[in-house]
Amino acid sequence: MFFFWQFIISCLLVSCYGQSIPCQPKEFGYSSFVCVCNGTYCDEYETVENMMDVSAALVVTSNEASKRMEVDFVEFNVDATTGSNETVYDYILDETKTFQEILGFGGAFTDSAGINIHSMNNESIVRKIIESYYDPKGLDYSIGRINMGGCDFSVRKYTYADTEGDVELETFALQDEDNLHKIPLVKLAQSLRQDPIRMFASPWNAPAWMKSNHEVNGKGFLLPEFYPAWANYFVKFLDHYKEQGVDFWGLTAQNEPWDGTVPDFTFNAMGWNATTQRDWIVEHLGPALEAAGYADVKLMILDDQRPLVPKWAREVFSDERALKYVDGIGIHWYADEIFGVPFALDQAHEEFPDKFLLYTEACTGDKPWDIVKVMLGDWDRGERYIHNIIEDLNHWVVGWTDWNLALDLQGGPNWAGNFVDAPIIVNPEDGEFYKQPMYYALGHISRFIPPGSVRVGLDVGSDPVQAVAFKRPDNTYAVVLLNRSSSETYAINLKTSKGDLKLNIGPKSFTSLAFNLSQRQVFHLLN
Image 1 (cartoon, rainbow, N blue to C red):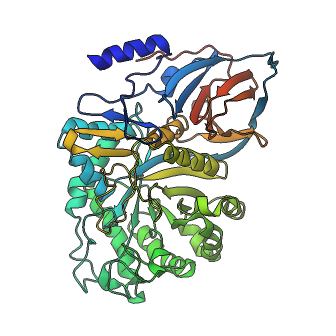
Image 2: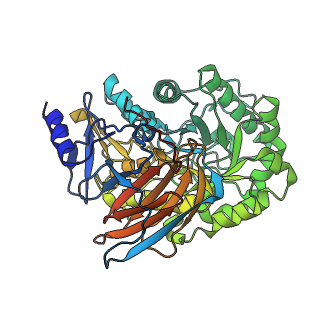
Image 3: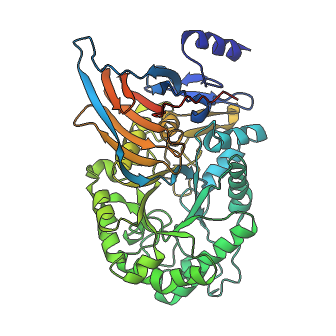
């Protein structure tokens, strides 16, 4: 009853149009707060489509101080004069310039995520966690990733064919991690959506007996005599999941192939360079997928750090056969802040414009200097997410995939001990889970930029607020803005063909807009 009256009072103070259930905030001593969910209560938000108004722009704001997905509306102004002495920054929307089409946004159904979600021992909470991501009133995710066999975010080392010498893969079998903790959650997520989720899978390592070092981790390479068997392993995986009712949109050839070239690497890995991966794909994996009826499954190379993208693309695509089998390039974010400018993305797109660029993994708390792995309510980690996504989208990336859907308070479980943070953290002892600022950073993107959206021109000059713009499949437009200043509010004049939108973008804030540039009067009523 308390939260009902809290909602009513908040609606009297701010616009609650479209806000179904508000955040229940809780602080843990970091820069901002989390939103608490349990078996009976969890914040959710009306779909963007149901909040649209042709006469005004929908403006949704989250900030460090107090807001999560707060709704407002701004009228179009045909008179651009400000009537004040404040500095106003012009952002010019150019609907005539178009760029890449979006595939979607999502997260990973890892072993650890499934174990954590089911550790709540409450079907209502399990459903609420998946709804928080894949329901249209949650983050409206449309992509999912699965580890093919064990990974670091498993509780043990395993593959699907650990019987040494089983070249024919007669003992290949899915494990409890798949049957109990991943497949049921994928099916639940799919039941929340009308369109199929774009699921893709990534292997961390082949069975140890196929590798040069005979270990799951460490420096090791696939032995050439097992190239055909390893390609068949992929086919077996797709077949077994299909039998369980889960189809895959895509595959990556190897998770972080660079890791397997590092001596004493601590968790699951297998080393490739661009040439060896290319040769294995064109001579074994591509033909095997094609022969098994999986030619339409999208195959991605690399699945590793951004600075490697141009070199890998050039070496792989130097063989024309690879152009037939490879559809895109998977990218991880972990080196982005260190190496800065995303010119590698532009280079790859300019040289191979028909091969998509998809971010396939990201998380925070991963660096050796991140002493505290889980920082409940830390705003900076959410800010780093949305900053990276906006930057990537402005450089030809077609989607972005977060890492674990849910972790525990330690940032695991993880057999290798390399704990990290996640947008949702579970607390089974108290029967609740926490939505972090990272969760809302993702929501300001995924809820406003659905699959099929096309990036359009947005001239921001050297102005202080980071931004990106898209035309959505329903022919409306979305703009996402990030203000990283800790104290400044910036006056933004967003110039469109319908008129100008005067926006005040407050400090430490994420802001998403959606608006209709048509003059036709169309309203979507709340359900």
